Length: 234
Image 1 (tube, one colour):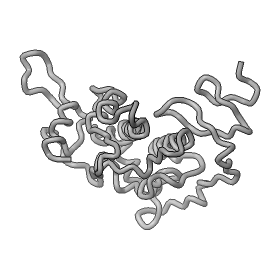
Image 2 (cartoon, one colour; image 1 turned 30 degrees about the vertical axis):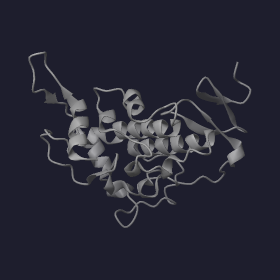
Image 3 (cartoon, rainbow, N blue to C red; image 1 turned 135 degrees about the vertical axis):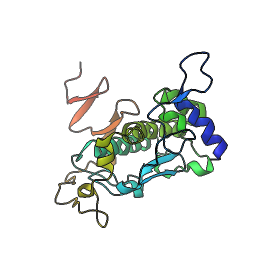
């Protein structure tokens, strides 16, 4: 993305006091790399194509297998960041379960297979609208859904860092949740295991993106976007 494109999309984080306010003010959630942001860059943050992630969590907790495209994950999330990674992981899985030709982990924004605009992270914008403007939901639903679920992850787990939220900054940099060699988290000791994984034919998905998730059809059923015991749906 060119500097001109970045500057244009960063305007989505600008608010104006009224018609006479020509200069505007950037909201606190403005990413550090945006022109006009008054904050120093947060240590460990990078812009990787359109997917902005914190490098300290390349392998983190039970679900943040970021360096491998969130391909591995199991067990109970260790905190809110790990929970956000689990939700993104599940959304990726459901996109492929729903459509085997959709492989969100393999899409490459650098060659325009999909696009997550910076504006989708702005609290002043609707991520569904921003993703639809850059990825046609009709002709390329896989690209649109990938944008939507990644934007949701970034708004949940990365935007608070740009806003200076110490809880989220500390989570991203918590060595006790990072895998070796950056930290000392042990996935086995912390029960990041799934001892009875369902087969592909046992799995279906429930809910709508960006909150869609897989479930075992032999153990439960989906009723109005929620998981319920077998035979309980009216």
